[in-house]
Length: 120
Image 1 (cartoon, helix red, strand yellow):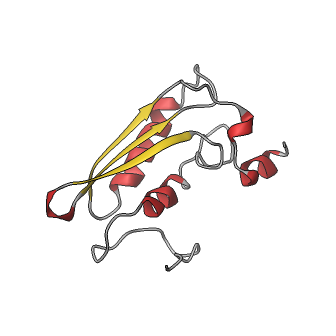
Image 2 (cartoon, rainbow, N blue to C red; image 1 turned 90 degrees about the vertical axis):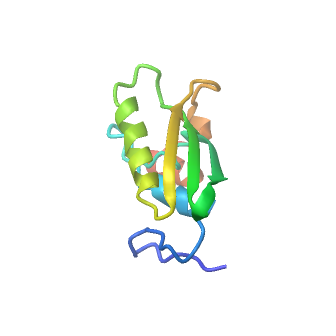
Image 3 (tube, rainbow, N blue to C red; image 1 turned 180 degrees about the horizontal axis):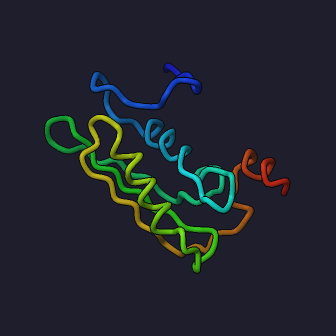
């Protein structure tokens, strides 16, 4: 398959179906304002599901958590994730659910996330 050029803006065109990778690319642009690492590398995304809709449209459901239950930025982070997913051509519905089970732990971070935070 083709790998998108990371320097190019990530956006789907209407000539291809929405793929999980396109959605993951959008989620990699969502950051916790208190930590300079995207929500994917932080390990905050627990589940991502694509559901085909009529006329080639797609519905996306994301389950994510936050680094702490008291995080006041939670609604903002979830809304940012939802807006980025909805910016993909062909996505007509995006739901981002914040869940607390299992609780987030630094071990859930990707190798890149751990390297950036200097842990691991």
